[in-house]
Length: 124
Image 1 (cartoon, rainbow, N blue to C red):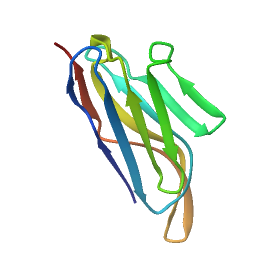
Image 2: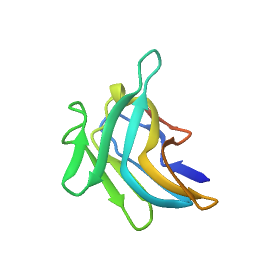
Image 3: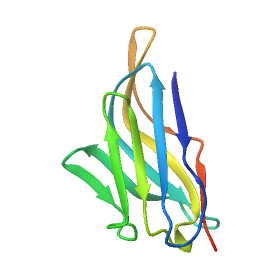
Image 4: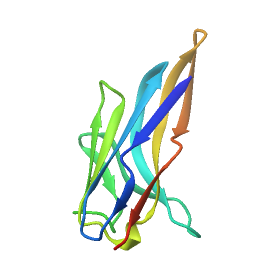
């Protein structure tokens, strides 16, 4: 009932930039918060950035000042502008919908959803 499309990952040199995009579609009535998580090999998935509204934006300490999250409420989409990338930013990045309210057959459900992930590799 919900489809999530992520794009924008790739290979970039240290100090470079990438922009990730996430768009959710389907029977979505509302989304409480949208965010990006990442998981590096051998490590747990961690929050990178999330935005519930314009006054509620969270960043991991390691990316603050370098990454910027932006959410389009009308389109159920968001982006993550990543600047000054470092090798330690290398990971699979996942789009997350927290508290997505959907309608299926006249019934409303509240669920969290994950995208399939997009690889970001920072290397010279």
